[in-house]
Length: 142
Image 1 (cartoon, helix red, strand yellow):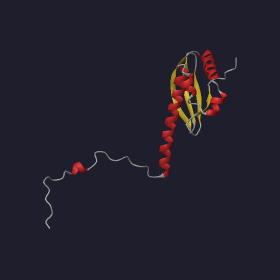
Image 2 (tube, rainbow, N blue to C red):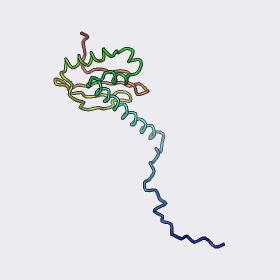
Image 3 (cartoon, rainbow, N blue to C red):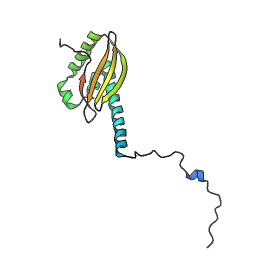
Image 4 (cartoon, rainbow, N blue to C red):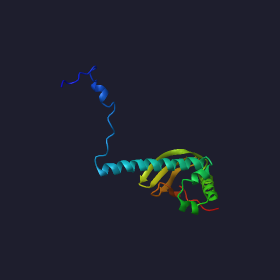
């Protein structure tokens, strides 16, 4: 049997992928680091969204980012009161200055107010829900 003759020569370039496939992590440690980085980016984004929502007066939407335990202990009115009290002490909220993940579940956000700049601590649970918020200054209950 004679080998078939191709009417057109194959273009090797057409057979090669145009992009190299993404490389999978080579070790379990690399995979864990990549997952950790993704988790950190996600909780950083959630913490920033929480601040943006509460600062915009959208406390109900901000409250949806809390885990059930914190929701049960921190009412909508208390959240608004705490934010308002913070602004009475520090002046009007201006902006987020810097956000960083300090450890696996703790996000520090530098907030700028008219009269002060300080950190807000946002603590997450394993489901990436907010389980604690520590306002920067001691806020005496009025």
